[in-house]
Image (cartoon, rainbow, N blue to C red; front, side, top):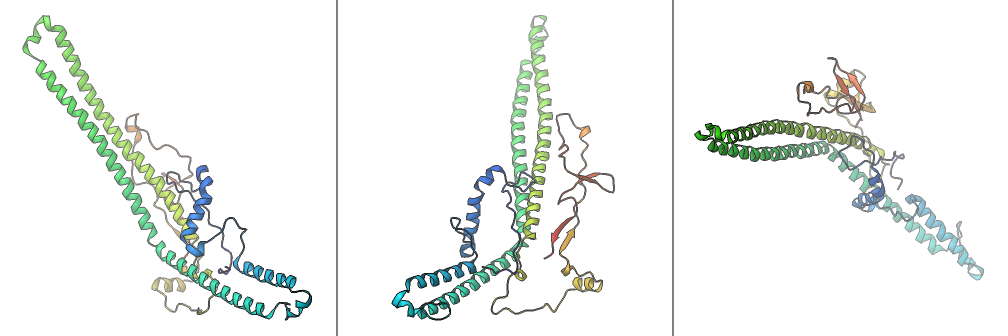
Length: 338
């Protein structure tokens, strides 16, 4: 449509999966990505239409091509005694000149309407972007909190069931412990009962230890999954915000006025006073969250409990000497100024 002042860089396709810090498409997704693109464009209606079976051509070029095809065809048809119908500089019939002129006018109106529709959609999307992070991160919080609660309840339910069985077995052993077991002839029965009770007691202790480890693993593993999903979504949102199309990217349309904001808020006025106007910056930087606030000494825990380990990510040293993984959550991030 040539509705933009200049061509914008293509937006990188990102994965739909949240279980990887990388945004690159998986091999499985690459195989079906073309169909996904068609489905995403279909939602946009006429402004997203693209016939994949036809070679891509810009709208003005397509109109010019149709215009030239009509002229060339007429010059081939009107020959001999009909050649006198070819008039004007283009050597085409007068009625065709009127038709082509009307077609160009309608095509230009269609182009303006489509560009205006795209600009309005881009403006609505820009407004919606301020709410997208709240929606995304609320979704992540809900999903992973519910996952932790569900897994903890299942583990606790399984523990309660086995503990109940252990208590019932203990009561059975108590009923079997009768005075005549002191008789030397019942020595073996007493030893067997004592052995069974000791095994029950050891099994219950192991159950308690295993349940504690399982609960810790649930919290740790789900938290790591949340962290990965959170980081993946942060990176996707940064890429999204850096590729938002704003009104100033579009060409001027009929009825547009070149306006300039007359009022500035205190923040902008102070920045202008210091010759540090934020509105003139191409990028803006935001500080990261820093080092993790949780302190877990894995060396004091049992060997069965595994730490998150070294993921191979680049790290920097904080003020207190702690290593911080370099990513969009922990360290400073730069986003295109809006």
